[in-house]
Image (cartoon, rainbow, N blue to C red; front, side, top):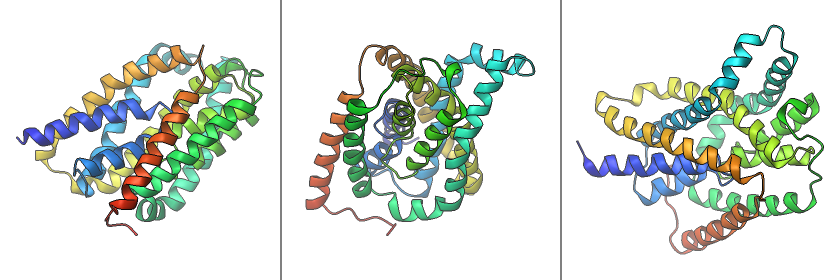
Length: 274
């Protein structure tokens, strides 16, 4: 067993946990950290897909009682029916565009330079939305209508561009439609469940032939790190958004992205895509 490979898996699992639900882009951070750790190539890409499953299972665990209640009462509970319908509406735009554009996005856009640029642009967008969005019309997920869900779904489509952040796009989309920070954040978590399960299993199905038995320890370490870290991050964010804005995350994106653009200006990235 390669202990250094295990350490890299642990680091990337924690990076996935920290960045998947915060509005800072998990895909972007995994590309960048993987590049610095020299953990790249087809198997690394499958590993990054797999550990997303650990992160999303953290959300399932935290909301397990609510999800079970929805499943058991869906046939008669109007609120449960509306939530499922809104999730379906929000899921569709990114699902369609993802199927159509996945190969092109992976080939041309999955590199640290485009990610760094998206981090900066996304940070500026968050600052503008925080300042000008009229939030508060929708205080809870149960108060959403289908138009709110559609806006969030369209926003999630933007996150197909690596570095944008799925959670950031959906939360900001919700705030633009008039949702409170907490309602937008909670709906983003719910929407992550079908979105990330679908994306993960589809990608694993396409790339399963790349895996070997020797990969099991590395994948297991990354999976567990992403799951346990995800439990911490989701609970932190739910507590944070009640009293605070997303501006600190926006400034982090701008500073981090700017530093990366400067770094790769003087140290050009050489990748397979392009």
